[in-house]
Image (cartoon, rainbow, N blue to C red; front, side, top):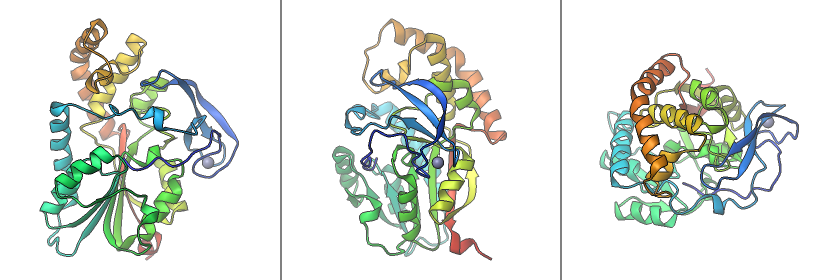
Length: 318
Ligand SMILES: [Zn+2]
C-alpha cells in the first residue's frame, strides 16, 4: 500500500475538515494492537472516521500485516486475476496506460502488462515494491501528487487504499488531474452502509481501526468524488474475497468476544491453539450461511466492499 500521510491526533473530518461530529461507536478495538478507538460521523458531510487519528501510524502496520502465506496469496491472486481480466478487456491495449496506487507485490499490474498495457505502480512498502520489480513491473515509492501533473493514464486503480489515507479528497483530486479525457478511476473500499458492517458493529472485520481512517458509504464516497472533481459512474458491491470471509470472521468476533482470531493466525501473529481451533470450527459451521448472506447482500446492493468507477466531471457533462 502507498504511504500513509502525516496525520495529527485530531478529530477533524478527513473529507470536509469540519470539527463537529457524533459518535457511531465509542469503542472499536484494533485487532492487531488491542488499543481502542472511536468511530465518529461528521456532522457536515456524514462520512465516518476513526478518532483519535494517531500522529504516527507506523506501529499499526507491523511487518506481518497482510503478510499472508503462499496458500492465501494464491487464492487472492486467482481472484485478482479474474477481476483484472474484466478491467483489461479492450479491443486494443495498444497505447493504454494504467497507474495502480498501492500496488503491493504488483500481481494485478503484471496481468495488465501481459495484456499489452503500459503500467506503473506506486508502493511505499520496500519488500512489496521489490517483489513487483522482480515481476518486471515498474514501481515507484512516491505519492500520486509527486507524479508529473499531466493527464497520462487511461485507468487509475486504488484497491483498498483510500480508507487508509488521512486526506482522501486531495489524493482523489491528484488522480483526477492525471486521468486522460474519458479515463476511469476505480476505487475499492469497505462499505460502512453494508449489512455486514451493521451486523459486525465495532468488531466488523473491515472496520480495522486505526489503519482504516475513513469509513465510506456509497453516498459519502460519491461526495468525496465530487469534491475532487470526479463523478461516480458505476458501482459494484460484489467481492468474492471479502464478503463471505468477512461475514464469518465478524460473526466469530461477536461470538468469541475476541477480534480476528483466524486473520491473526493467517497473518502469523498467533500460533494454532484452543482459540484458533474453536474459531476454525465456527468458520466451518458458518461457511454456508456466510455464502448465502453474501449473495443476498450483493443482490440488495449492500455488499461489504464497494468498487466505484469515477470519471472526471468535465467528461460527464453532456
Ligand atoms: Zn465531513
